[in-house]
Length: 116
Length: 113
Image (cartoon, rainbow over the protein chains, first blue to last red):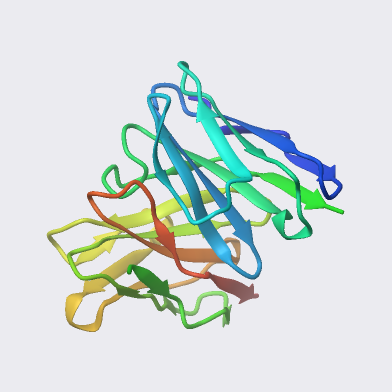
């Protein structure tokens, strides 16, 4: 059974640009969550999608957005990139909830974004 | 608000020694508690979880954790560490009615031969 797949694994952007990251969850999983990981802030929850609906959102500016498609694949977008957006962006999938109820998140290896 | 504290940023142990990683949480109701491990360049892998019942839970790779409500703690233990256990360990808390986990800042484990 394939795991959570994130693309691209690495990317470099400059300030002001935008970026789109993709996540394919484990087959049969309907919930996709996104987390930002930085050395200073640790793992911070971005948002969670279930059946194409955003059910929960973390404390991030509106530049961070996401969506989920009917096949459960998800994308997140960051517009007007800032230096502080440099981070590892982790996607996680679960059967039906974002972690609190389902009890287990399956993480991808992440997309490492560097903003110059 | 929910929060998780991992007071040890970095721990170094010798291979074969015992290990205990500390985790304290803040939450008004009964939390769901998790330990995840992250190897360099990898995503996070679930080691174990506590929802209810027996306060001593067993996980993968020989790890166990004990939930102590009176101390708001969920410490991770392993009786004998292997070099392959070197990684970063994250404690996390969740609740039934939310769809997110709150993570601690992590503890980096270094193992010396």
